[in-house]
Image (cartoon, rainbow over all chains, first blue to last red; front, side):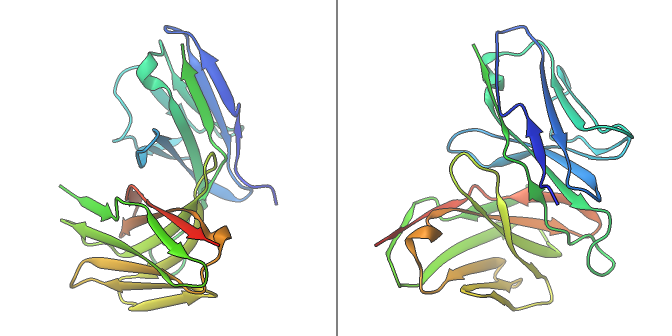
Length: 119
Length: 112
């Protein structure tokens, strides 16, 4: 069973270009989370999606950033008109539909990350 | 606002000793707490989960405690090895909201 896959692993963009990051969750997982991590900083939650639905996007900037998780295909995090401050590692994680007991105690399985560099 | 604090300074210990990492939180009532390990250049890897009604959880050389009165979790690695050197993250979750609140992590170095 392949783990969470992210591509590309490294992405270089010039200011003003678009960055598109892809995440394929583990087989059987229907929940996807996107995080951003800067050097010496912790994981910052961006958005939580289920298939075809955005559940919580409270951590995502209102402008330039968008995310989707279509019925078919990977989840996409899109950053339009990138700026130097967008340079960071972006991690995707997935978890299964059901967890232990009544509440969602599921652990999250992380991908290797995409390192975005904006020149 | 919700706040999670982990030891900000790196922890250096000698091989074979027990490493103890702390996770404190305020303004939050988590239903469960998770610990992850992160190596440089890689994504976090899940280690252990402990629920609010559990005092202690063990897995091989790992032990986690959860004190909801003190609002604190302790993460122990016994008989530590150089391969345990990494950054350890705690994350809190509440109820039906799957969103996790993350600490900044503590860097652990185990010296041979």
